[in-house]
Image (tube, rainbow, N blue to C red; front, side, top):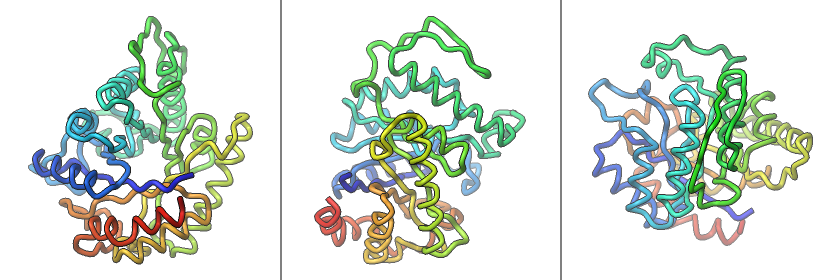
Length: 302
């Protein structure tokens, strides 16, 4: 698959600055911009801005023209899956077919706390992740009812439906055997991450193991594993791939060897980034990557 490179532009900046940053990412030639889906975050002070990601994607759909737009990743904790599907369909319409919905398994304790919810167990997180994905997939394809363990409903309409057919792409964040089974059945794009506390060789070996589990799950669901794009959120303190353009290039090439065709980096110039442990980032690295190594990588990898 053709190499794609995206940027998470965390929405914890004043709106004008966030908008300018997204426009810069588009002008630099990156393929996509993604946002978080949290009500609060451990890197934030109470007075720091943290805007709703889906709302900002609607704004970005109006002021950008080319970028793919998406969530990395939407949390089942925060909204009913039919509402999530409706929002995604709306964003696909507003953006002219540029929306990619990323969904995860909802493990952030602070979001539960803000909502006054008892945190779901790991088993319930997986169950609700599966059901969320099933409901979103079905309703975006036109199904009008569903009957699940956690959610049931009828009389649903997604008119006029997504621009993209048969529905907008789903990106599923999955790292363990149970969530990888779900990704193998439903994902258009699988997203994993550079693991912290591990050297580069260990990270790549673990990612390859996860990719094999994804392949097995896809085959069990009677899907061609090659139809699932493989994506990674890169960078850790142990593997600081934003330390230089060359470090980034090396990381992309090493991931490509194990079938990863999309890399996503978190824009390092935002408040609290040092607390997220994605590793040292050189000044101006987002621009330098675009100017110094992206053209060559695209030519080399397609």
